[in-house]
Image 1: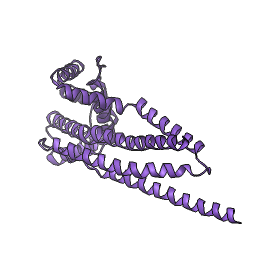
Image 2 (image 1 turned 90 degrees about the vertical axis):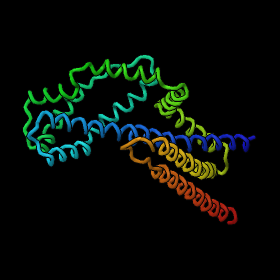
Image 3 (image 1 turned 120 degrees about the horizontal axis):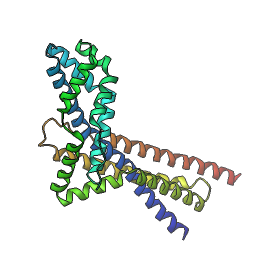
Image 4 (image 1 turned 180 degrees about the horizontal axis):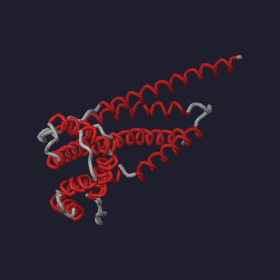
Length: 276
């Protein structure tokens, strides 16, 4: 009976060991590499164009430098991450929370005032900042515009796509990840209590890790392939890389092999003590 329970729990570990890194990879790929990169490119392009309109005296070299600085700006990354996560979340929500693009833009420009001035070679006044922001938001109610776009997208979206987005939001939620971690810890503790001698539970961890490493690499590779095929027709989108999930799988595999080596060393020590 103990062997059967250990087998079930080891299978559970294979499931959680595979799911946790796969979910992290999927979230980073969708939020950062796909939506994030596209959003970052659009934000930097729009801001550069607006500054070009507001300050026609800027040279092409200064505008290129400004765009490059914005592309490499950490706060742009944070702004894009914030809204990419919100967009995906709102596509599954009945009630869409308000956004405050204008305030975020104002905060961003004020916090990066020195960087923008250095790149453009032009000192920004409070009035010029207000004018630039007004031109960026084009005097529209961006909050209502955003809600309308999300609502229309949900209405026009095929049922299969909506189901996929809902599932994505569920499995990438913080509560789901916490549940996976708790299940993993509990499974390991129970295996350790059922296994003798005291260190033998690491064999189950190692076996689960080796199997999970293979599954994770295969799933991650297939995921990257599917996403790249889906984005092939979209201009300006860079290819999704499977390298991060492959590296994670390799680390899992190496760690599992190390655990098996540790188990073998402890077995030899135990045998020597038994003989003596």
